[in-house]
Image (cartoon, rainbow, N blue to C red; front, side, top):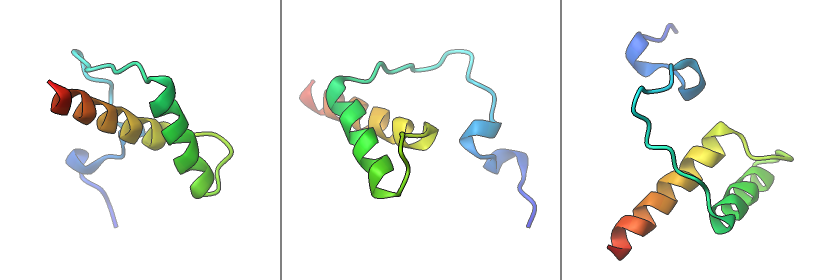
Length: 64
């Protein structure tokens, strides 16, 4: 099964020029670590961190 350019994995894509970089809070870092441990990894990977940042942005948007 071959992938098209539009369905590349996150680590295969180039970083966007204007990224919405989100500095993870200690709470979000802990959530990423919990997710990694739950899936059997010692440390959070890119996907864990991306999901933690996504949830953090959603919480912040909900507050405003």
